[in-house]
Length: 138
Image (cartoon, rainbow, N blue to C red; front, side, top):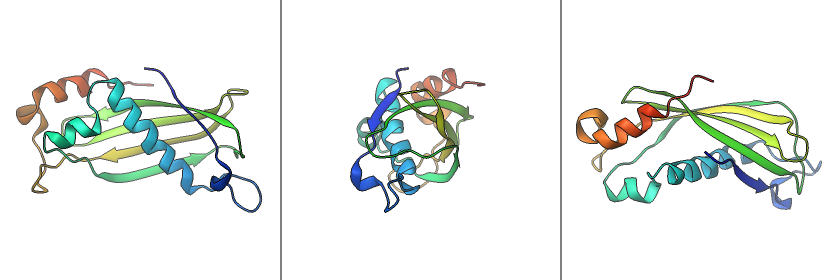
């Protein structure tokens, strides 16, 4: 998988010139959308199939600050998937020096168009297989 890259925008910084902490969660979403597209299961495709994937947990460990115009590299991997809940891990680093700025995770459920949990293995075996094969132990 290729990393997702983005630059810190001026409006994402606070009065001290440091990126506001809430932006990292948005960047996780941007990287997650890119990751799913790379594996062939874009959000659009999932929604067209009647699948929603709400975030049920977020964890962020801030390692160092970023500032306006820093280029950030975000790697995404599947940490855990057993058919009901998907856990993704993110590592964000500065492109300039490779220093890690954040490590985090998000957890997601899968619901049908009526808001009921999906039995992924039975109802969407191709998606189940793709996600299962991409689980990483890192």
